[in-house]
Length: 427
Image 1: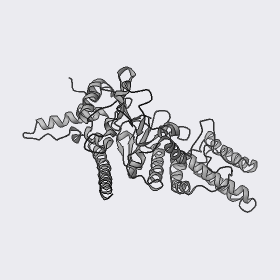
Image 2 (image 1 turned 90 degrees about the horizontal axis):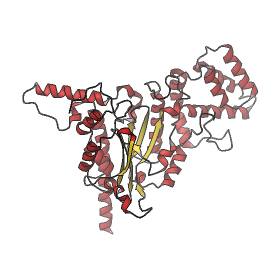
Image 3 (image 1 turned 180 degrees about the horizontal axis):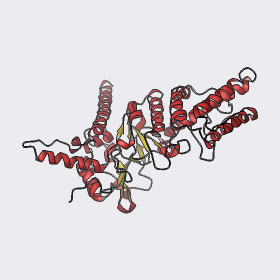
């Protein structure tokens, strides 16, 4: 087989086959899903779905061992694959089961945030494009969601994974997350979901019930306090969202429609279109401050509406349907995005501001790094080949981050089993 080079199409069969043979981190991947060294139902009863050449989609694959999974992945050579839940039986045996017998039982709680949902409020890119600047929206979402899931719900094992192009996924492996049924997932997501409505709906934040001046839930209020700085940095300065007439009209449309306040702001901004978003937000703050003495009720409504503006422009835009159902399939970590060639690598939520999608290695770059490493080894007498080939590439730090996450999952899993065993002995 010819050695793939960097210029090969990222989803070409030769490139993908080399990636699956030489670079995919099978062992930590297995341990992450299985949460044990010995295959359990979390792996053997797990659904995998493969996308093959020609957009052929194969569902309900399952495997006895990690080695069996590896052999089939190399044989099928999919352009991507997705992970589903643990079922009541092996998905591969579904045709031998009675109707309705194959039911989802356990599955990580997952979240999906896609940059496409931010198209109406980002000014640097559109459609499938993404850059370091608009990644700021994703970074803000990750920080808010990661904090809420850990502090409000007590989850520990959150794996954030770059989607390969314009989004990010979160996988939560805590036993409490795995055991959530669909109704519980729906309730949890409904609590976290703040941004609702399509492009035609101007105001997408409605979290105060029937009272426009009601206080926010404490969890949401905490998120707001953390997002105020993100709003100034990202929305006002970097994206300059209210610079154009379209931008400032979008802002005015989600505020209380007091004729005097809105009319004065619109006339001021039309008379000086060069005013920045920082200036316009200052104008709004000044106008609202002027209401405090003469109209407390209207002042309070505008004060709360400005909080809602901050939430609408910075709060996580969650794809709720992905999270509500255990049988929903989600692209696996360390897949290769067929459009960009970039690997779906883990992201450290504590360093999410520093993450740059353009620096994520592509499969072509990784294979070229392997070729260069092989050439250097051939020129060095007595050199020892490393255990895993990805250790010779820029994929190494991402796999190490993944392995650290997996080690924590396994540690807690072993601890829970020891505690359960001790409890049964005491009983």
